[in-house]
Length: 211
Image (cartoon, rainbow, N blue to C red; front, side, top):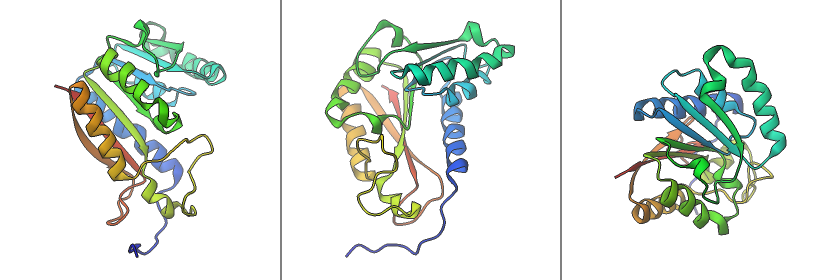
């Protein structure tokens, strides 16, 4: 029987959400990236964070939801005081297929989006993003399935109805290691949110660096 540590209330979803963006932006700044691609940008929450940083001279957000993109365009339009129109583009596109619109970037990020992809399409993501687009840095965050009990979820329950899967830490690292080996990257891993000695943290993150 697996030992489960004593339950304690995890960080609130709002705090975790904000911390996740903070960690991603900080990692991008440390990478020295000037051009950033937000894969699965949704309603533009990360885009707003990115345009506040003058270090990023070119920012592109893509998503397959026209409704979400309309909201993102409306939100970022309120930030034209920081050179938004010249630095930011928002496009209807998918990162499961390659296009010139998503190539030539210093960095690409997937913040809580890869778990919305059907597992059968993960190889298409690998081919389009890592093998064809080849950004110098790729950052991915995704839920840690093992931590779901800390959020009060019954075993086997996913955190969001749109999730197609959620990885354990071991499975996430195995997938990332395979992608890195096949496409010429090295990996480093981080935890986001309060850390439990047995279950890890709520969010797990991998940073790929092109070799």
